Length: 311
Ligand SMILES: NC(=O)C1=CN([C@@H]2O[C@H](COP(=O)(O)OP(=O)(O)OC[C@H]3O[C@@H](n4cnc5c(N)ncnc54)[C@H](OP(=O)(O)O)[C@@H]3O)[C@@H](O)[C@H]2O)C=CC1
Ligand SMILES: CCCCCCCCCCCCCCCC(=O)OCC(=O)COP(=O)(O)O
Image: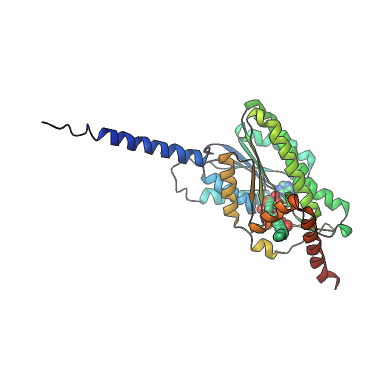
């Protein structure tokens, strides 16, 4: 009797192909949506986390609009990106730049128009720009509290509100904000910064609920310390620049890792991402579940930090 070779093998081949297809679907689902060709706007793209996000989203094939106050520094980022070997077969786009100060309310609407003109639409807005603060509330002029709020809160929400109607019209878009662990817990001598990050968290939580019906996801990313110029650029109680690279900043997360986490959050349309080690994570739970203990720890921290200045 003759045996048909392949007749017995066919089910195995079909099963193999099926398993392979299922595996590819699984990988795709885990990876989430592609950002290839997506128009991604990044504020604060001239340095630190914003610059790393520019690198990561550029490598993923996004069409970038890079924002900041300093045209020359943004151009430098554009040149760096253009000079990078692609290492992949996907199409890369030369980024556009839009220069404006988020703290100047009258500039933001015009900047939003300029941003929309770059590619006619915005697919992902990453509100990353920000400034930190170091100071004792007793010594801090109210204008410093206001200035930090302008950059970290009113600027980003004004830009978001200016770009949102075009997203709603298209029933498409994604809004991301880089908050901080300090948007979840407040630590001493950071009043202006922690308040602005708490405000950002609340605003974008409201927005998430309000725009879900338009299929526009809102992602709040709350990182712990990152190795950037944030502490160097921080403002102090009298409005002057702090100018110190704090140990906590210098030993923080690698901004590349945080930028990759931001890309992952965009692809997966995550709602709230906390990037923190065990201690800050415990502190966040403690603030909710055992506030009295959390406040005691913070008061003790405030006493310890005050000591060197008063002794
Ligand atoms: N580093 C850290 O430890 C952490 C940082 N974050 C957050 O990450 C974000 C990025 O900060 P990071 O990269 O660390 O700090 P950097 O100081 O390195 O970068 C800040 C960026 O914000 C831009 N920026 C500041 N003020 C304004 C303004 N008024 N208008 C427009 N752009 C402005 C700066 O651009 P330019 O000066 O060129 O205008 C710069 O590109 C911030 O929101 C910060 O709060 C969150 C957790 C931890
Ligand atoms: C019973 C066990 C109790 C354990 C509780 C421990 C409480 C420890 C407190 C930890 C505080 C962590 C603060 C983290 C702050 C942070 O990561 O901020 C990120 C930033 O935005 C940095 O900005 P900055 O300008 O402050 O450098």
